[in-house]
Length: 149
Image (cartoon, rainbow, N blue to C red):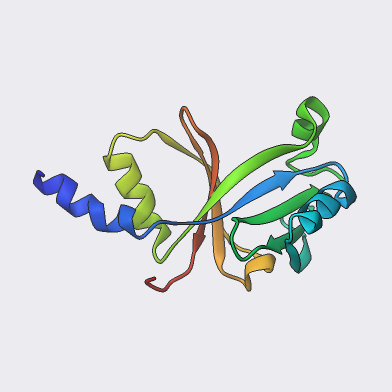
């Protein structure tokens, strides 16, 4: 392993899968399906920055799911839902230091385009989240926890 690979490995190792985001026009069917699988409803909120409704669902043996649906007025997911219907919208990774993880991904050759700057997320107790488009993969969300796992 060369020096640059040694430098980026800790930042990449600190990334942990957190949840996937499911964009829906209306949440009722998604809620029924998740409940039928044994998921339990967690926190829910309206995000005034993104102008979307959010609901977290948890399962003891499966990944967490964030159900996202439009609020009143325009939101970032409106066009996507009209074009594709219900879809997995993003994958979220948690890490203590978002900038270090993103720099490490870029240093490893991954092409990343910032979509949104870090903003406090109401659903995650004010922890900052940012969105990024990863070439050849899609949209990711980075949740900055500020703590090592």
